[in-house]
Every structure is written in structure tokens, then in C-alpha cells.
Amino acid sequence: MALNGEPPPWDEFDSSAYLKDNYVVLRDDDRQIVELVRDFFVGATFDVPLKGVDVGSGTNIYPALAMLPWCDHLDLCEYSAQNVEWLKNEIRAYSDSWDPFWDVLSEKPAYQAIDNPREALLKRAQVSKESIYELPADTWDIGTMFFVAESISDQAAEFELAVRKFVAALRPGAPFAAAFMENSTGYDVGALRFPAVSIGLSDVRDLLAPCTTDLAVDSIGPGSDPLREGYTGMILARGRAAAE
Ligand SMILES: C[S@@+](CC[C@H](N)C(=O)[O-])C[C@H]1O[C@@H](n2cnc3c(N)ncnc32)[C@H](O)[C@@H]1O
Image 1: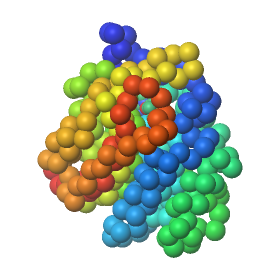
Image 2 (image 1 turned 90 degrees about the vertical axis):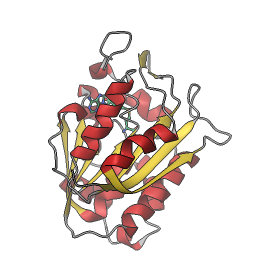
Image 3 (image 1 turned 120 degrees about the vertical axis):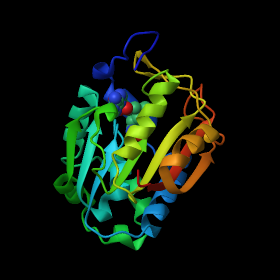
Image 4 (image 1 turned 45 degrees about the vertical axis):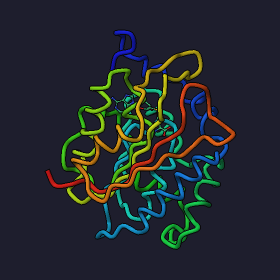
């Protein structure tokens, strides 16, 4: 977790600034990702109810919302004390700015079946302070990890370990969606700089192929509206955890 040899200041992560920079408006690239993840989970067959996990949730609840129809329990595992507090507060009654994300999900009947997504998230989600590197193996039936493995370190070996730990935390056959920033040089949150490992689509595919099945990996371009400088797009992987 090094940044020039120092661990990044996760407990000082400015949750409000990150939320404002990334999620108060539904961006076109996030809409594409929500649609692809929604359609993947709708098409994946499994026995319900499931125990789900979102790893490194930060101030993003759309991965959790995407798993909601199938989960009677959802763990939101986050390492930063600030983001843990933000998540605990947000799930009490999530803000209206997430409604456009839910509207995209609700284009499919599985999501329409949830009358009150705010109440469902509050009942089913549990926030905990946990590191991706310490996740128990073979534990969850469905999982998401968005912009975490490549965005918590500048060390390629730590990116690779994080991806392997995420997949290992899933039971064999568990469907997952994982998103990555492409060629990221790091990012500012408020006044602080956070690290990244610069990765591309083939890095994600090569890493996931040996430990997954049914793998699909896509690039999502920033179009005419990049989020910030210092990245070239987003990468979305979907698949199932393979048996060890
Ligand atoms: C770039 S943010 C992504 C947040 C969110 N998932 C999203 O989609 O925007 C990276 C997140 O990983 C969290 N994080 C940092 N180190 C972690 C670790 N060891 N285990 C789990 N999460 C970690 C950070 O606190 C932060 O919330």
C-alpha cells in the first residue's frame, strides 16, 4: 500500500470531495457500467437468497444496489474510517442523487420487484472496516469491487494480490463485477493525493482468466467528458469465480 514508500492516508480520505467529484451526477461512463453489470447479474442464474460483498465501497453505493435483488445480506467492506462512517450514515436513507442510478437498474423487472430500495438496502447491508488483503476466502455468493485493486497502491504486486484476494473471497461459481481505472497515474481527493497502478485491459484479463470462468472484459471510454486528467478510460470485468 505504498505511495513513495508511505502508506496512503486512507483515514483522512475526504468522502464528500470524492462523492462530489464522482457520483453526484450520473455520468455516461457510469451509466454504461450500470447497464452492463445489471444485465450480467440479471442473466446469471443462481439460487437465492445470496450473501453479497462490495469491497472498497468508498462513497459509491451503486455496486451494492446492483446486487440488491438477489441478496438478503450485503457486506460493504471498506478500509478508510471516513468512508466507513459515510457509508453507515448513507445507508440509513440514501440520498436522492442515487435515484438516477436506481432508475437505470429498474429498467429490468428483477429490480422493479423491490418496492423500496432505500429500506431494502438499510435492512440488508452491513458496513465493516476491513482490508481487501484480509478478506476471508470462499465466503460470498456474489461480489463487486469498483476502482479499488488498481487505486490503493502504486505497486503492481499489490494490485495483483488485491484482485486475487477479491476473487478468492467468493465461493466457486459466484458471479462478480469488477471495475478498474485504465492507465491511471493516481488521483486527488480534496487536498490529498492517492496512488494507482497503471494497468490496461490485457492486465485485467490475464490476471482474472486463471481464477474465473465466463470472463468478459470491456473498455469503457471517457468519451468527450473525462472525469479528470491522468487516465484513459475504465475497464469492466464480469465473470464467475472458478473452483480453486
Ligand atoms: C478509488 S476509491 C473507490 C471507491 C468506490 N468503490 C468507487 O467505486 O468509487 C478506492 C477505495 O478503496 C478503499 N481502500 C483502500 N485500501 C483498501 C484496502 N486495503 N481494502 C479495502 N478497501 C481499501 C479506499 O478507502 C477507497 O474507498
